[in-house]
Image (cartoon, rainbow, N blue to C red; front, side, top):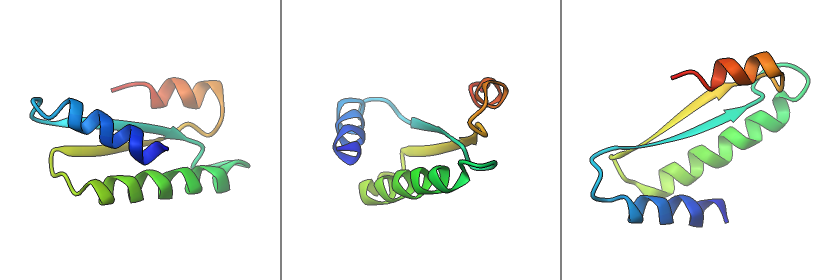
Length: 74
């Protein structure tokens, strides 16, 4: 489903020059295993798209409020 959603967004936005897809996940701390699984899924979906105009940006939120605030910053 995630791949379908990403593909739909890419196809809908092809007029745009670059598409940035962000993932905020717990890549450190006690939930790091879940975060690594999320990262792997997002990276696989981005590779399947094979679109050089799509950039995947991944941020570690440590599954905390402070980490989420950091991850939300551009």
